[in-house]
Image (cartoon, rainbow, N blue to C red; front, side, top):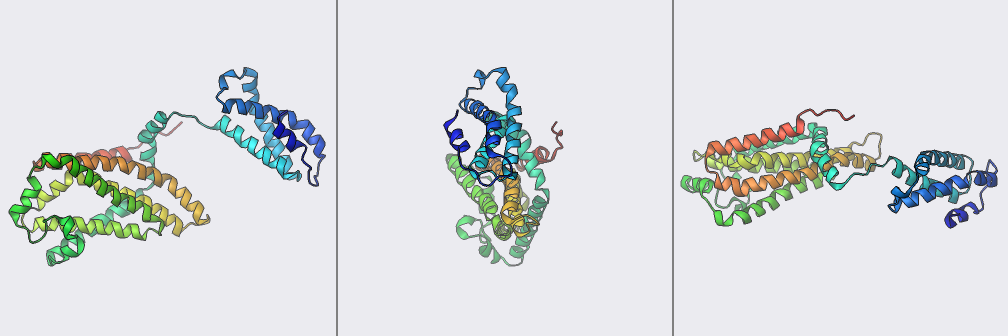
Length: 341
């Protein structure tokens, strides 16, 4: 007999509604047999189990559940109830738990999990896309009406000389000049910068999504202000192409990250009949999958920004790559998938 089980069986019961001694004597053998089978499975000895033991496992599990129900309803001692709860939980995971390899889990993430999580956030995604486009338009109009707005939106260090005081020739050079010696470093810097924006958009969502919305709006204002500087010198089409090759992927990733953060923030602000903690946990399941996937998108955007954008100087090619990437992401996320059997 298992020593732990024996100690539990000998524990003094509270005032029961059934005969505790007879109850233990009637079911202790099944509990101990189930415990022995589970220990062997947990040690990786599944192949050593006989066919009889494998067939007996579901029945022993149901018997233990029944014993647990009786123990709870008839006020048997707490130690026995705790033992049966633990035994039932272990049996549940061994019988119904799905064991998959890391490679299969990764494949499921890319084939179905990530896309389904993004689809579940379609409302929040539409909001973040709208906020980005609207704030970009506002940023463009503000700088067009008064160039001094540019310095209030984009720090001078980040502008890197691409500000209202730059000449058309200088701005054109930033769009088409090659800097092959620094492409790797530049790509790493941009990936880090863009990842920070996405992570903050997600992480700040817990504060009722307000900081997330503000960050999305600021990011949109920056894009609009940047484009206007070039448009004022007749280079608007060129600047948008320069941004397009990577921006469709990057901005989409940031919008998805913000949508994930917004989902958590709204769940906390409006939990409904759930507690705020339960609502946040439920919302966080899909949001976390989306956030994990955006790291992949930002990696792709970093390569396009740091390498492709600097080596491909034809405007048509830049637009073609950027729009093709956007179409590819949309098809990947929103193309209907077969229902799981």
